Image 1 (spheres, rainbow, N blue to C red):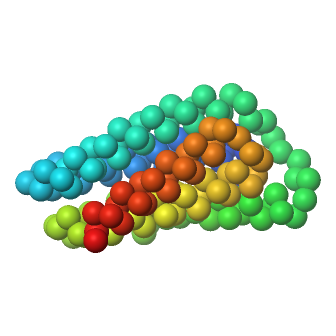
Image 2: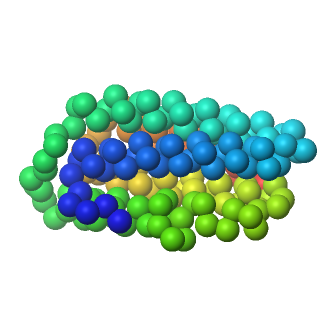
Length: 154
């Protein structure tokens, strides 16, 4: 879990989240390369995660190092965002039980969970730092990823 969360640390964690997502998607693409459609979906998602990482790195320069909470809502947004870190990097995180993923459906389900949790995390970031075109674009991209995965899952 993030300790002593600040807007900058929350964005830094978003960068790590995108890195982890790209690694996960590339692993799934390699593992499931016999299914061209699944392979291509995961490679596209990995490329998107690389772009998102760069966008968050650029955003990091525009958020304050420290943060004075203006309201209880902001405090709750930080707590919600930091609690998401357990999914991404904790013991039960994204890379747990990868060896048990043997089918495209298994991988799609894991990816869908990742995208839903990432969307929630980015919504918490928006609650924390306010409206921001970069974060809004990330939220839309995560929604698009969810739609892609759901469409493929049937």
